[in-house]
Length: 85
Image (cartoon, rainbow, N blue to C red; front, side):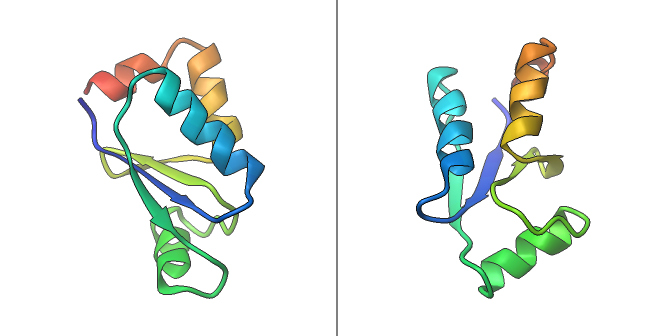
């Protein structure tokens, strides 16, 4: 199973959406609290190539984007292959 990390903040509906999708798929993930201005947020921005929004999702160290990107991968039938790697 792939290593999944998701940088989130509290009260973020997009973060909840992404976590719910991963949960429905039975995917274990590491959640990193990344409030604005925190070192975790700075790390997420650096790792994602400058994206400043949350969630930021990484599968096996590769930035895949946010919640909309995760859902798009699922709808395109590509998410399972990434998670199986």
